Amino acid sequence: MELFAVPDLPEIRSGDDLASLVADRVDLRAGDVVCVASTVVSKAEGRTVDLADVTAGERARSVAARLERITGEEKDPRFAQVVIEESSDLVMEAPFLLTETRFGHITVNAGIDRSNVPGADLLLLPADPTASAARLHEEWGVPAVVTDTCGRPFRHGQRGVAIGWAGMPASRDWRGETDRDGRELDVTVESVVDELAAAANLLSGEGDGGTPVVVVRGFEFGDHAGSDELFRSYEDDLVRQALQEWEFDG
Ligand code: GDP
Ligand code: MN
Ligand code: MN
Image: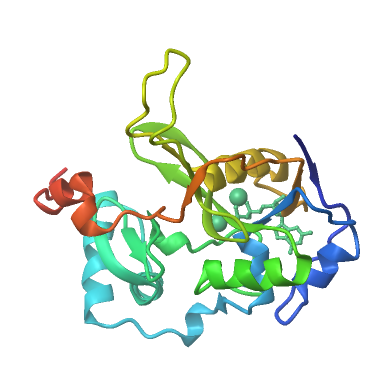
């Protein structure tokens, strides 16, 4: 398996045909998986927001005031408003805003970015990254994975994860297969799209590299059952349920 970044992509603007910009620069072939940083998908989809256009409601003002009190840092209630609008649930309100996006992904501040966004204050995640991936997959004829760099519980540091995918299952379901001793695997569902996203993120970088699209060449899903379950629901998430009972008082 080999990974390379698509060279010479321009600054992406609203309305740009991202599929063609990539296809013009690389000959995609069977066995490729194309990983695309959500930043450029969002830019192409015009998902920018100027804070001057936002009016904070009551909830946003109280969330921001509490955060300001706890962190001692200035918090713009209009930013809280945008985060709330992008979220189906606020999983934690302090000491930072951990939210479930409308498409089921849990991340800080609904994944809204303030870096690599020229000409606007904020860049939202794509509204439906799997739908975005499906459009790219259709144009390219190979699987597409939309990625974002996210923090994680239990460990320091951020890494790339898949937030949308099309043309391949999210996971390899190893259950029912055997290890080298013939012992049957009964829990292993390997999140392949996250592993590809992490590898791609390693190459695309976080700063001014200008390499938001990475081709994974020669990946084989193999002869395994597939699963598209990636985001845990509330009912299925014991850690999140425990968090519901807990209130930050630091
Ligand atoms: P995120 O992980 O999806 O939030 O994206 P990042 O902001 O970390 O950017 C990932 C990579 O894409 C970095 O190498 C950036 O320099 C690059 N990048 C971001 N926006 C653009 C763009 O509009 N054009 C190009 N060519 N590169 C970009
Ligand atoms: Mn991001
Ligand atoms: Mn990133």
